[in-house]
Image (cartoon, rainbow, N blue to C red; front, top):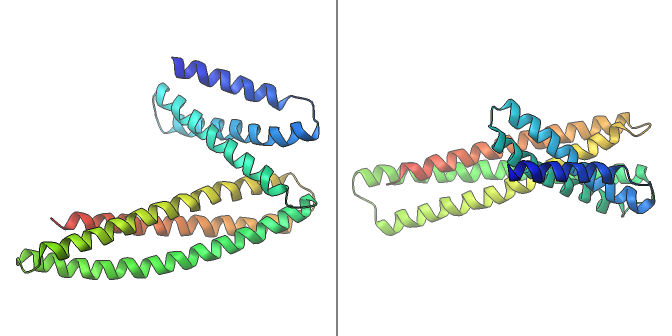
Length: 215
């Protein structure tokens, strides 16, 4: 009940802030606030569709509102580096293209690394069944798997945060004039990053299976 009350207060505050006078300072601040409100509403709707109970929906909505506010703040901070909206859009699309290209390279390298770990894992499992492998070697292999899992987890989080920004930028572009080509370019980048995230998460699942195979 308390969580619901706090959420109502937070939503009311965001709505009241969104209706403040449109000074330059207010506009910059409202961008972050509105991002938080939108994120909360969207996530709350998704949580409801997923069949979560009322308390879980409240928690999900509040959490996503916080993420939305962070994305709004990122938009505001990055915008300061550019002289105009056109420069902002063009510049950030280039940033997205570079980021996503780097992630595709990371994904390809990760696939190769996981493949090597799988081969080593299979060999160790066979030796383990025959009691022909030392505990030290098994421990070292487990440590390598866990280390890789943690690095992949960190990288995935970074990719997902960037995806939220790129999606928010895409939403802003929809409201801008003469941005059809920019929209098309950014849409390709968002799709590319989503595919990379799916591929990286798949590799993370394979790493978890390797860890389970060893006693």
